[in-house]
Length: 294
Image (cartoon, rainbow, N blue to C red; front, side):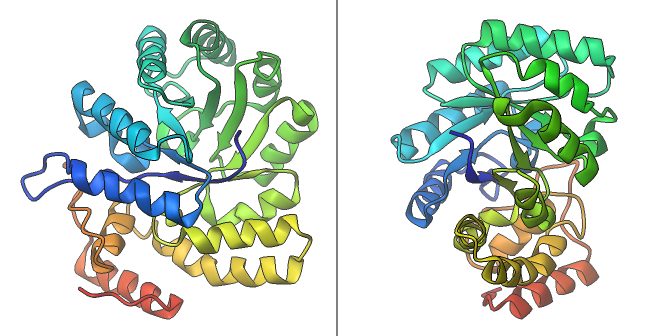
């Protein structure tokens, strides 16, 4: 199931800051038509720390219903409470999600043994296939490859989104786990190198804007056309970097708005881009060949 392009879906808001349900449905259809393999709503890029639990599950419900089984829905369900994470996975399952993404617990910083116990309990009780999410820059905690190896023995632990930025660590995970777990890139800019060492795809931010190009790069690699894959990689690379000119998801939402996708502003405590960074982002879009309308 976990292969190709999964997009960490932005959450569209209205001018008053409330959830824009109609726009969310439009975004799902945009990805259905593009051929995106799966969506990850309620993740970091979705601004999940800023919404209520009612909004959280409304977003999961809308994405599942709008996708109609045409693309996979992997709902963000992780918290720094094991029991709450289990409850979230169960609710996502009730709503029809295909899988759940569960981040390493933030702030309370468990040991590797604590991580193992946390994820095993969620896998035992949640009832959905799990994508583990390792993002030390956000959580202050790195899940080590040997811990991933232990977890990969569980039949419901199917994938890991690796956003440590360490290609060496990713190689070690693949070496230790083999085909017991699918490794997906957590960083757009290094998707091609990760495919080269055995990764199977990406949970993407830039895919919110150019899913077809990311899909084309993955397809070229899979067909063995490395020249085309490298060409697309280096085309995408500056745009991928621009998506992190400030804290994600501020740049990608601003880019989508510039392109007329009208997804609204980020919620506090995030704020809009600094004027100079907004111009850098606009230039990156233009240089890519996109046409900002704002």
